[in-house]
Image (tube, rainbow, N blue to C red; front, side):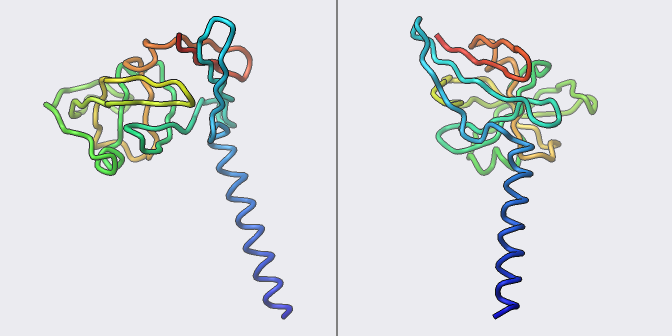
Length: 159
């Protein structure tokens, strides 16, 4: 019985520690939306422990994780995620990334959602060289909403 108690304690500690690490990487696992006086939808995101804004959302009603990247021209989807989402592959194009020039596939996202903010028909690319599961939320989406940073908080606003 003593061994069972130790094993259960170890499993609970492992679960708690994994949850702690997940929240450190992505403090916006369930982004909350608010409607302000002008009728705009606002989603406030907290900066993670590494100084980035990471949030859960969805593409075509399937849950994904976004990393906001104002330096990215398009939304950039890792190929492994694109296959899971069944995204259509369009023509290839060369893009300049932090790791050099690579070939990516053009695609379109029917819907992209963060909280209650929903964008339709968003231009994106499928990048076969991205190793992460995170989708870079680039300017092809961000230019369609207002965003502002104050302290450790980024506010996304859709009118």
